[in-house]
Image 1 (tube, chains in turn purple, green):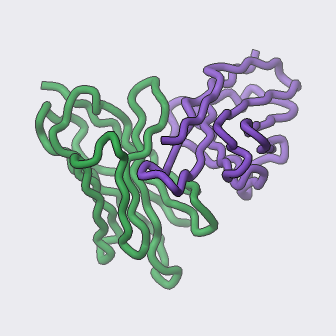
Image 2 (cartoon, rainbow over the protein chains, first blue to last red):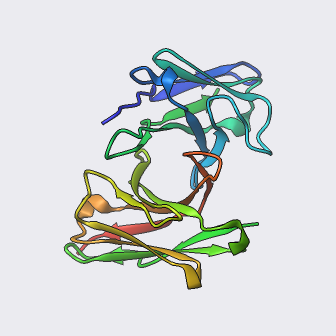
Image 3 (spheres, rainbow over the protein chains, first blue to last red):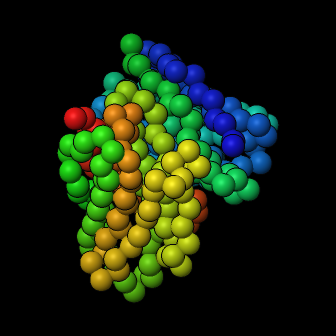
Length: 109
Length: 120
């Protein structure tokens, strides 16, 4: 089945830019979706179809996807952005079609 | 707005069967049936997809748990039910129901989750 690889942790100072990667074989040919999960809360969709944002998600959250890596970029990071982030794809050719990455803990220093 | 709420036992014994219910509130049937999924998260670990049921009743299950899972829908009650047989302590997790977006294959709405502990 398809595998998504994320770094376990990313640290960034407030006001700086955080980049969280999601690696997968030719992931650029798939649509990547990103979720933010704050401690004790359910995940929340922050980016879908690689680059789109749901209503209510700040423009500071953006995404890109090419080759073997998709990236979630958070600009002007705030303390309130600290959370776990998960990427997800649909692997339609598989009998296990919904795939999540292992998650990345974003720490705001 | 539409909300999802999971319910079920907080504690089950090994070998028992777990039944979880996801109740959908404020859903307008004029929008057609919803596509729904169950996802779980062991404490301190990553999200793991378990099962989905589409509005046409198409179902799919995690390959690692296939044979133990059954997903069903009770449209009259706006509920989606997941059963998992032969529970084991490694199945201890927060179980979420989530709505699959009509715009694509991602989850645009999640319930708050319910923590299920498997212990004798």
